[in-house]
Length: 67
Picture 1 (spheres, rainbow, N blue to C red):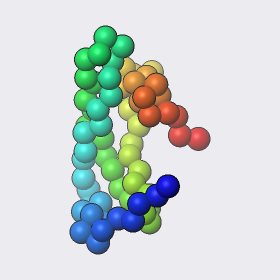
Picture 2: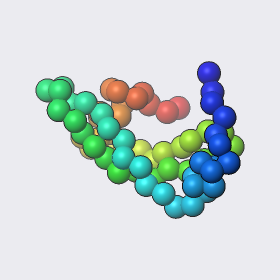
Picture 3: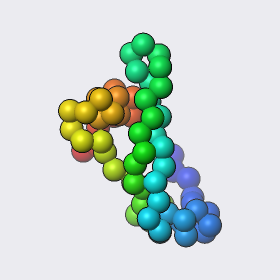
Picture 4: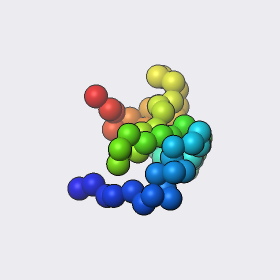
C-alpha cells in the first residue's frame, strides 16, 4: 500500500534534507542515524549506512535490505 505525498512534503523532499532513522539494538536501546532523503515520484528514498557499520546491521535487521 502506498500513500500520496502532499505538495508541501514533495517540496520539502525536493531540497537537500536529513532525517533521523531510528532502529532498536539487540539490548533494546535506540540506534539513531541521520540520513539523506529525497523523493522519486511518491517514493521516499533514504541513504544507507556504510556496509558493515552498526547502523547498517540495524537497518538490515529492522527495515530490510533494498534490492
